[in-house]
Length: 634
Image (cartoon, rainbow, N blue to C red):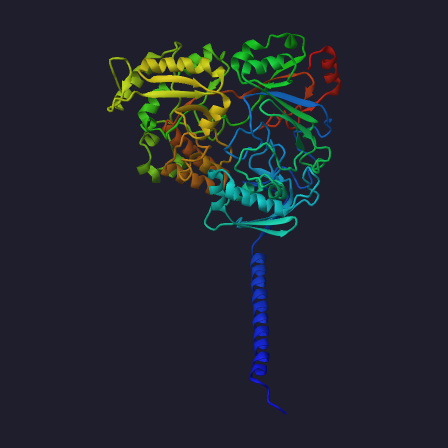
């Protein structure tokens, strides 16, 4: 018997080693999996149909419909409204181009909120979610019946694609926050996806944040080569109740209800999405838009002009009852509408300049003379809510601010929280003029022989109000006149909508009108609005303001474990922001002033946070037929 060759001896040994290595790997993997399983067994995993920031969900797992809807509302008819301006894109998720109105209506998310709760989200595309008490991760189990408008299923791969798309191409301020929160996303099955969150971050809102991503069809992007950060008119299929039906670029948009909408019978959708069509007509100015309403071209109007509301509704349609005027309660926090300083401009870095300019806006005169007394003054970023700061800081709020004393202005502690200045009945308030003059003198802006204020370099104090709406002329021009009497070289520059949009997005302005109001349970969105990391690039931060103190308060707000802790921290932030005088607060009202042709109906008990004309109103077919027969509608 011959001896085995050297090679023959080596082969069996190599196989044994490979087998040993294979089984070692298997055993190690099993140990790891078992360890993970035991670890997961030790932690309490919550399985639910929704998630609430604080406390319990209002609606039980077996709820039949939302309390504020009419579950038997008829389907059909059309909601039509006017929009002033134009559009050249149907992609609302990019800074490029001007997105069409309601261009997000076609898309759904894993979770959805309601109009009668704060901080609650219920499964929409997701049927169920699982997460541990510490919210280290979440698994969304999606509804297998969910479909895009082209009939193809919505899968976890689509969610995974969208997450990566926003992470790579979303607005800078948004993707910065998303990258800070999410460690990884993993598709577990065709209809299950897991998000793992990073250690060391506050996780109060992380589930809602990823659950709120709009879900597109991934294959459409792959087939077309489209990207998120571009202006385009083509739209990926969505899974929502409406689809785009007709478009005349810059003039008209029509959305039609999908007759095969997969989610029509879900409890969260019953009594909603009742119109067959939503038609949006674009107009060059408010006058043309109002004339279109009066003539019956459009049938609903959410009136934002006090003058129009007080004097314009005397046309035949109102007198003969074809048109209804109504004031519906608005329980929302005020929008925080204000003239906003662009602190990216050096001339506005001095708080005395900002305060002086703010003193010259006479709200009291404007409200009486221009607004027919319909408005109240905005004072707080959380106006019309219990979150607004009042008086001097005390108790828990003072304790929260005390460790930041060295990085805050002394006024935060020594003075009552700033209120908007009060003026007299004349357009120019002489007391405020004298105070503003003193402030500008102290800031080094001295009046010359020509009546204009100049700094040490001889530069005039130029202040341009950038505006797109002619209706603001009557408000801004008196303000400009007051500033000129102060020696400020003030002007109003009214531009068309595309110019305004471009300059707004590139921060090419001195002062614009914007909305800085906060939410009831603010969290990560505060970083986009006031955070230092994205202050220079975030379109959600028109002022460009940030500070170490606001960053610390934002972190405290995000870490709040109870609603009471949250409210204390938000009041502290409100106080700190108001002391900085980064805005000239405008006005608000606590009702919705609406007018509509008497063919629409809505539930008797409206929710506090949305009166729902595009959501849960419906059309009365008999009334609509009568209006058409009379010639009132076109």
